[in-house]
Length: 231
Image 1 (tube, rainbow, N blue to C red):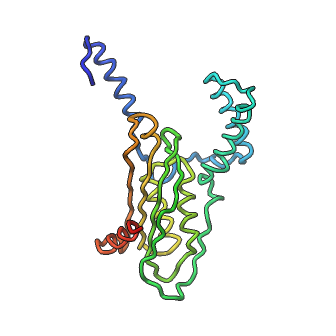
Image 2: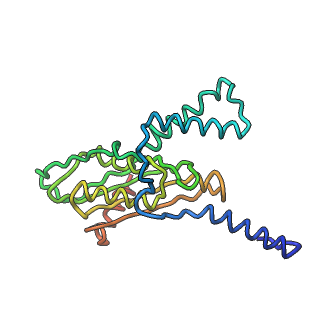
Image 3: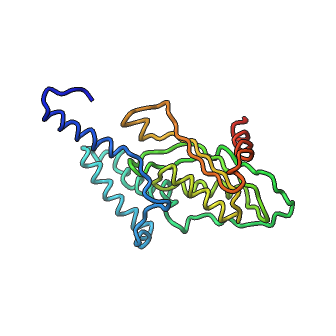
């Protein structure tokens, strides 16, 4: 911070800087997505109606002309998008059913599903997190359909998120679905809260990983990383 002409200005600006930096801190408060007990008392249609009204007020406060043909439908579009699309992973009814199948082929090597597209949202600024997830597991007695790996990733991405939490949530769900600890998840993502505001850094990206079971061993981690880096 630059030196100020007076100590009062220095302290005043220092406090402002600290407050702004604190708002930029990406803190994960818990492994579970923070939800109220009454989170699902309202129907989707009721939520859309309420959000539409609030977003109408936001646009009005910004000075936008909501009688304009291009803007008048925006509050409803945004509300529907929030509930039905980008945040539909909040509702447990949308959780994919990962049906287990007997591992009849006795396949006990590594299975890797890489480059699963992620569209999530930063829970601190409600702007996009865009990236790729790579998941792997070594089966015991059961396997699940390949599409379910993608759906599990997308379910946990479709909510306000912190990347570290999302990584662990996906890993935990895969362990439960597959009845094995041998799971690896790695996510590479760009955060628009870093790129389009704040420090405006468009060159950095964030990588998070969760390894359990055999993947805690260097040999299996290296094999996994080798698979996802090979194009």
